[in-house]
Image 1 (cartoon, helix red, strand yellow):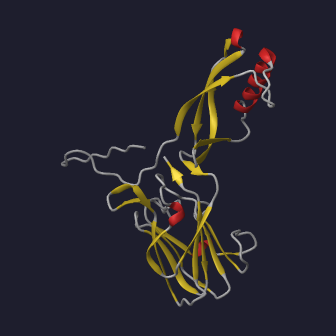
Image 2 (tube, rainbow, N blue to C red):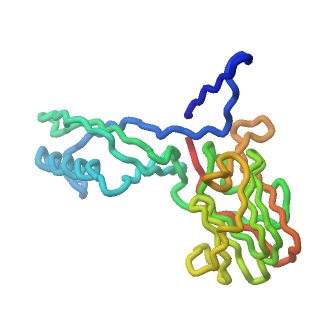
Image 3 (cartoon, rainbow, N blue to C red):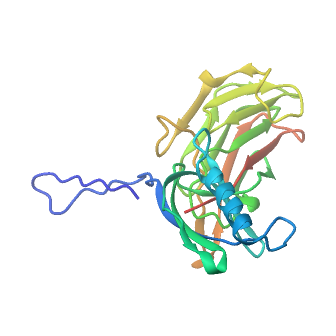
Length: 258
């Protein structure tokens, strides 16, 4: 977590500064390289050296983020990382084995679910639980919202932070308003899609309030429910006027973890 100390004359201590961002995280990975071929056969020292070179090529990636996957049981999380440093291999010649350590950095800070989840809510509707995002421990700032018309001035509010994102126009029947919170873009489309490409750009009519709203749109943050730390839920309030039975709200996003 980033820290900011703000003190003023005539007041003890520091002024509280809320809504701070997290720093990029760095951690070490320890590798043990064995002499086994992809078939499972023991290829001795020569195969171990081939395996070590393959690992070195992976850790030497510089033109893109390396995707790191962490799995335990049914829990799978991924993060894009950069390799900050690697040690020289330590060889164990008699066992045809080597060990080395790499230090990686997660520029985007958070671990994420491997795939997006889509949630369907109601419009309007208060205190709705976005069930696929339950269990998150970090903020979700790159969700895509889809409002199906008719809906006049639709708005979505994250209950935990009080932040909102709203559209100052009207979504007609048969139209969809797509709001890319991470890309700070919005468009009106007439097909059943999650792509803003080819739609009518309405970015200038989107209003955002809440923490960091000057440079990013809606945060979705889970909050502990009923005093149970295992019950972490994302709650949203959706408002709009002029709705009908065809009006709908959907959110597509991936959970975020510290």
